[in-house]
Image (cartoon, rainbow over all chains, first blue to last red; front, side):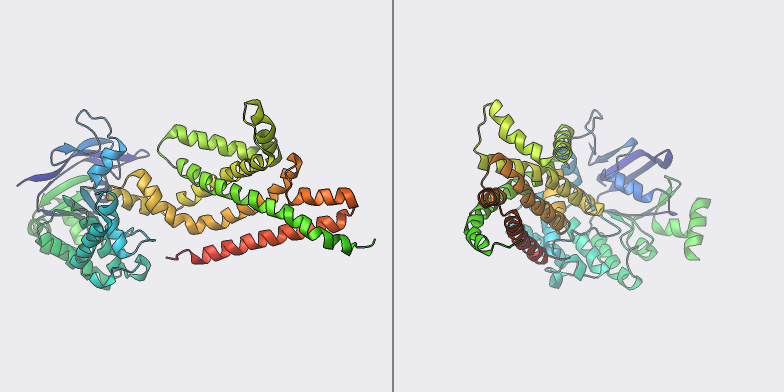
Length: 251
Length: 217
């Protein structure tokens, strides 16, 4: 398997409170990884470090062997180089973060247009295609405020897809949604996983984890406790902490 | 006291000539103020610290000194360094530079107050800092920026009365000239006030119209 991303020894503290300590993760091409763990376990912070939305205090992240955020000698990358790297990694936010002033189509087209330098019509064409992929072909001209939460999150997924990223990171993509809207987002994610895209999702959607994940990563207190196929983690966890978390979850 | 209606009638065209100059000067100064203020506002949000410091220093100076002194500086100090400006243009530049300082601050605050998830999402798709400012944050700040900018432009129109001190023949100066001949300060100042009031009302109306046309989301 070709390795897409490798994070090694990621450590991050905010004002003396250590959120991540020596967390490591590798992601292979085509893999779907689900990160679970109690709130405050550092899942989201780890995800945000992966594309340098947060700068780790220590540790290295490589994207296809190329260090992220720093050059080979460890110096921080300039803004332009960092932006280029970020364009290769998609990110889907818990609260969608769609551009409020733009239509669904423009939200998806802005990246290909401004970052990849596609011609306006070409960028719109790609946006239409990606919105079709998340089943929103009939909503392209609506603004985010005219869409339901589930639709907004799917636009956000299309926005990430339009960059043709090497992997997509999902930060609790369904936890801001009303329960009846969760399925449509999970279904799209599952379709992407089955289509062979590389996905890393922080989520508590156990159905998604069971049906789509190749590996589940359990995190607690800022570090990766154990990693394994979903059946193994859910049905026969090795660590007491994993067992306790899963027991809580099923209550 | 007798109200001199005949003088009021005669003054209408004289004051209108002054008002025309006021409008000309203010329009040009507004263009300078909005364009330069917008640019300075964005520069104050740029990644280059020295550029940000320069804007901060400029804004501090504009806010920290009276407009009257700024007008004198443009009019009297610039010739010392070899720049000779006719009063009209000295007025335009002084008012424009003054408004730019305040508008820069309005833009900085407006753009800076756009929800931070917007910039984060733009970063996540690989947009550059300047692209985020221009294509994501600035458009979303317009609704917040227009009302205080209107206030600033209204202040600019009122401030243009101070240009009478460098003998620009604008509305206030035109009125003073009539007063000097006929000594009817009450009638004339009342008329000047009315002329300013109507001008500023038109500006405020335009601003409300613009605000209504800005998209809601």
